[in-house]
Amino acid sequence: MGITSFPRTPRLVNRFKLGADPEFTFQGKDGSYIYAENLGLTTLTGFGCDMSGRQAEIRAYPSRFALEVVASIADSLRWMGTTGNGATLGLNWQATAYNGKDGCGGHIHFGRRRPQLRELDTNILDSTTKRLLHEGVFNGYSFRERQTLAPGHYGKAGDIRITNHGYEYRTPSTPLSSPWLTYFTLVINKLMVYHGQSSTQPKAAEWFIELLKLYEDKDDDAAIALSALRKFGLPKESKEDFKGKWGVSSGLPAPEKCDRFFPSMIKGEDSTCRELFRHFMNGLDIPCRWPKPTWGPYFLPKGFQLVNVQPHTLGHLPDVGMNLISKDVQVSVKLGDRFKIDSGIPLPIKEIREALSMGISDIRYNPSFDAPAVVIKVPTEFNKSLTQCKLLHDVLSNTELFPVCKAENFSHIDWSKWDNLKPATIAPKIMQGKVVAKVEGKKKVVAPPPVPQTRAQQLAYPQALYGEELAGRKQARPKPRVFNDFDEGGIE
Image 1 (spheres, rainbow, N blue to C red):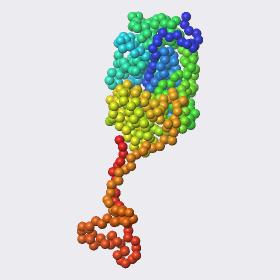
Image 2 (image 1 turned 180 degrees about the horizontal axis):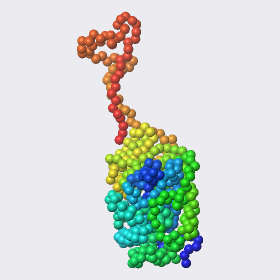
Image 3 (image 1 turned 30 degrees about the vertical axis):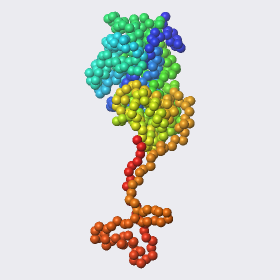
Image 4 (image 1 turned 90 degrees about the vertical axis):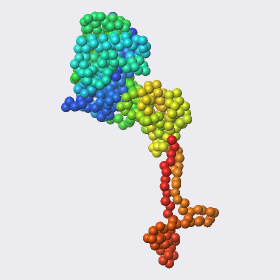
């Protein structure tokens, strides 16, 4: 039966969602390796850099429909081109498993939380990756370099990372060299996991066709992919600059006058889904254009800013600040020796401690900043716990406790509690000094001067104390000097 028009309500056999966070690298015209973080990219938005800061990474919006996942990747790549006044557009965007220094993975996320199926899923996914390599869909030489030269277990067979939504399969190479390679990889792996068993068909190319035919009347991803396979043949990994294939505009974007907010994942436009559908079904090129926001807010009003998280922290710390916006105060989360909150504005610390009590027992509070800023420090063990980081995220986004909200709630938050922020009240400094006088009523009794010790001090003493008054001139006696030593005061 197949498919002839864009499906408004797609037929899908899978109940689980798919996601992806494929990586790639920037290359100068001279072949040099340009680090993503040096272009102003971070780990907190839907497009940015990997945790190492070197590779670029796309964090796709999850969906049951693989076409929508690819649309999210396409628009995220387009948005990447708009940042830094187009700083990335003059570079080659290269998607290969290993660039001579770093590996680039094509991680696929599955929203499947049943641990009893994980071993079976992993074996099926590994066998699928072998077939993709056997048919040259992925470059075998680059794939093996990534497996052997990249540190740790990264990219090897069975590389699974458990997540809060299910698991992430990290063995495949990056598929970003073309939209067709990305879509084909997602659809084949989705259908194989749903199918629940590895194929015994010895010829891999025919096996791909048989799998898509089996589900084309039940799943629109399968129907679209089968049409594209007949039109384009099997996709192949390429080292070419891939910007144009994804519709990334080569011209410079118009400068924005306001600060922009980008979410942790960018949902693809409906028009992008249709562009991809026409590309796979009819062979039409994806048009190069600037994207449009599918989220809110896009522009941040004056006084609002993103919650800042210490970059390149291996763990779950980025989850704490994900999609959070603060008002009139910079809020930062970073690693430290213990859990501590430094604040330049008054906070309801009693309520904060109570809200965090389920996961954090010892919270130090230090209202000592002169500037209106809030810095939350967490220990390394805290960073390793997804549960604790999610708890802190929820408490931090409670506008009754902090001047912070989730981006999705931005338009209807009441900020009146945090209007006219004033610095936190600091305990006065403790002053210590020498007694120079005692006041009793209206009478002032001057403390006796120190007794001179040396002969020179004894000769100079009268003149130093009384000055020219001893010489017969009518001049006021100078006031005794006060010498103070100060101890720093404060509250912790």
